[in-house]
Image (cartoon, rainbow, N blue to C red; front, side, top):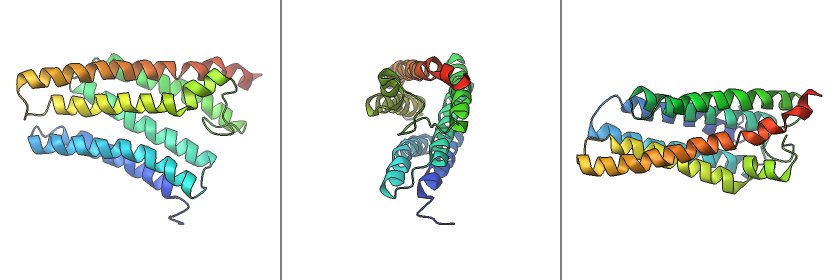
Length: 202
């Protein structure tokens, strides 16, 4: 296998296992395990930017790469939302929205892919300016990523055993606010995909 050619996809896949490791550590209620989970979560979100950078740097952008990027994003995101709901840190509505949105948008995008269109890039299925902005712009994608990363990292810190109850409550409040912002972004960024899907079925 050509490592250089597949570097972006390798990073995407490794990122999933980094997230799994972080979540697994949350079952060990120690300061060390939670701080390690916090650091691994930072790394997992940092790797989300690295895979795209590598694809552009080596000129390896492809439909497969686009699918791998989205697939791994979905696994990582859903894993955190589900874990936090299982732990009782967030209401079950968060993973339900995340999973429902993923099935909806990715189902539509699979049809688009069969017609030569991708989620992002020059062959994007989004043909309107507002659709491209909401789904593909760095502003929207970056804001969504920051809200998610902030929510996930702060939730882990909020339940780490090293903080006082008062400090933990403050961190938890900020984390929940960011979680709501992230899940709203999640829904909003699905709207153009659904709105522009009609052309795929004509």
